Amino acid sequence: MTHFIVSRGAIKVFVLAMIVFILSLTFGCVGKSPQEVTTPTYPPTMNWQVTRPQSNDLLNIWGTSSSDVFAVGDKGTILHYDGTSWNLMDSGVDVKLRGVWGNSSANVFAVGDNGTIVHYNGNEWSAINSGTTDTLYNIWGSSSSNVFVTMVSDGKLLHYDGNTWNTIQTSVDYPLHNVWGTNANDIYAVSGHDAIIYYNGQTWSTINENFESIIFLGAIWGSSASDIYVAGYTGNIKHYDGKNWLTVNSPTHLNILDIWGGSSNNVFAVGDQGMILHYDGAIWVEMESGIEDSLFGIWGSSAMDIFIVGEGGIILHYSGTDKID
Image (tube, rainbow, N blue to C red; front, side, top):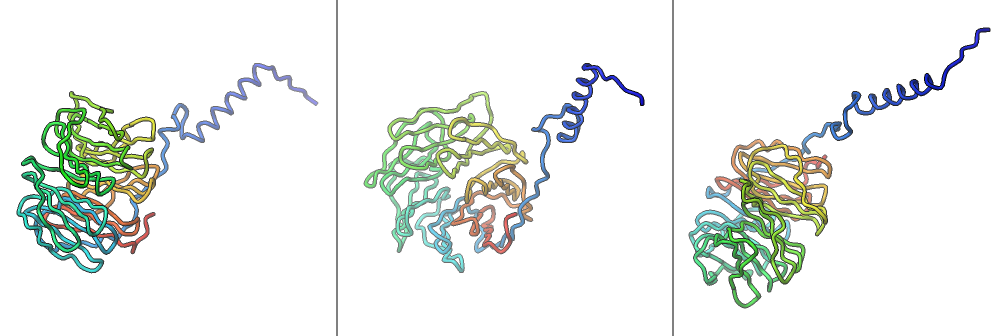
């Protein structure tokens, strides 16, 4: 019988070779990092019902439930959805309405050009004196007595305390375009210059700002104080995890105009040329919308009831008929 003597050096070489072989199987090839290996992800299957109840652009949307939804847009347009059909409401104004928000079906605000604010009391819309003629972009509140409106004036916001509207100065000196928060002491506003500012209930502070950046941020939404997304032009998306703001991989270079989610692993973004993006908790992918119209606003009462509004009065509605993969 022949005996083979194997040196310790040979054993080490063999072990190292096996490790390399195993890694090559795991990562596809030697030297390829785990971050480069991705599982193929496909857009979720969703049946969007498309309608155009009128032809004016619709710029924003908000509701209290699946049967109480408000959409606003050009020439003072306000539409209401009752769960069955869209009906035109008399806003009493003819300017572009850019934002809509409320805290009940009988307390809804819409804002727009020339300092316009109209209020819905459950029966009719009436104009409110805002004290400004500036363009008002968007609106959000933590309650009926703590409402914020972004405006074209440099670094200023309108604030409503339940009785009067007052102009307040923030930590920046350029226009803010959107505002959103989780409560009265956790509020964010976004703008150009890649800017994100924060309100803790007492003072505004600047979190992110880059005057050399051409990034415009105009969309913001979160599922919690530690899960917030902001997005904007050229497909830029940033995420806050409770500690840091990080730029995430985006599948588009088109402008993102609004963002909304049903949960931390079911987030949508909409924008130019009919673009709809979806985030499943792992990766953003672009969905097939089948349209070319720019999409300006998105809101849902749940993951199974989502509305999108846009150019030429288009409205997309997902009612859960197809499952989100």
